[in-house]
Image 1 (cartoon, rainbow, N blue to C red):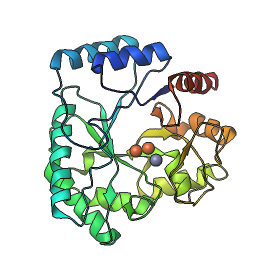
Image 2: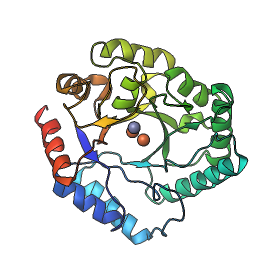
Image 3: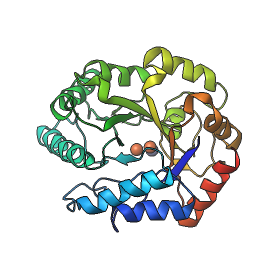
Image 4: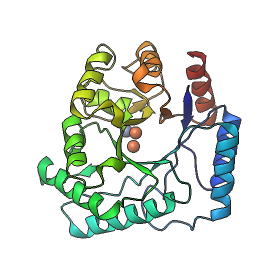
Length: 275
Ligand code: FE
Ligand code: FE
Ligand code: ZN
């Protein structure tokens, strides 16, 4: 079954996002848990979240994938930044429990010069302080482009974070097609090879969601610039093979392409036409 959607603004509340996505033709979505520059979040009204929960049920939506703040860096060299990030993570995860069973995706972090090994260890330490055994949310590490000092640009780094986290059963991976491509995994010409590597290193059972994007740059460029579907270097045919591949069946596909609402409606319809 296809679950497709895009990022939506939470400005009008939770149930409003569900209504909006239904009107746009999709059946899953993502939203930023706080404004991208970090800072305070509005309180989450439980009735509004419950109304969204009913809509998801009634309309047969797939699992939603909330997105943590870009500024949340669990492995910064600065202690204050790390502690602030841990606070954000804890608060986000507590809020996610209002709508049990969804995904919370975040960028593992940037080690800011400390090296990947230290970065991985700091991320796992933070997760060990933030996750708890009874939580109902699955926490997804996003595959990264490997830009700058980003951690998570290789499957090995993600696996290392999972291995060092005590509540590792709560962890999964969100596969960002632009990022994976930019990191040097050739999903256009060797999708099965990339998925075999993913399976060997991380395990396909950890694959929980997809950020479905084209890339403005060639494979391995480590740039992280998203393109509209079919307007980048991955291309329509390869993206279609990804969407239809059994490894991605039933996973939420979230568009993060540079589009306005009309553009997203078109892309949602295009992906639906492949099925
Ligand atoms: Fe992301
Ligand atoms: Fe992404
Ligand atoms: Zn990106």
